[in-house]
Amino acid sequence: MLVLLGILVVVVGFALRLNPMLVVTVAGLVTGFLGGMTPLAILNAFGTGFAGSRSVSIFLLVLPVIGMVEYFGLQEQARRLVSRLSTLTTGKILAGYFLVRQATAAIGLLSIGGHAQTVRPLVAPMAEAAAVRKYGTLPEPVSQRIRAFSASTDNVGAFFGEDIFVAVGAVLLITSFVDTTYGYTLQPLQVALWAIPTAIVALLIHGTRSLLMDRSLRRQMAGFQNVTGEVAR
Image (cartoon, rainbow, N blue to C red; front, top):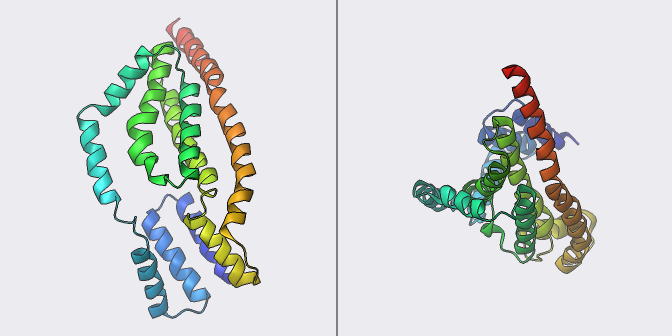
């Protein structure tokens, strides 16, 4: 059970807002040493994990591209598009993105969505633009809340959608863990099928939360307007 102290290191490190790379590295070292691994074995595990992930270096290509399209006005174009569609609200945009994110993750297209390539340049600006069209200039707390909810929508959609795809790493990790730990042969298709009910429940719950976002924003903006009016008087 001592090897689980690595998880405690991660929790404490993130709670103290330390460098994530440093926290994960220290947690890996702690787990390796407590598990009886030699320094060379730990280094080999780090190297194998890094080299085995083909997507580790993709961000080196993605981030410059995202920066370039933002420089040429991608966010402004997204806001302008939403401002012309009066039927779109913040909640509807987030609910629609959640459905698309979960559906694409379920067929293995995880790279289509994401915080860097989709949420920041497109989803969050569109959700904010819908709120601006309805309420005018948004207070900073409201703006930050919309951005945070946009990011969480991507997280939940990807998390509960990816396990439906049999070839995703999470499913293969589950099957290999059950096989090596308990000696039970678990097929990836079995995990994927049992992930479908969970994904449906996640869709219903988070989709409803997204649609209720409009009502919540209305109450929050009314509160800010009341406070502003009292201060003005």
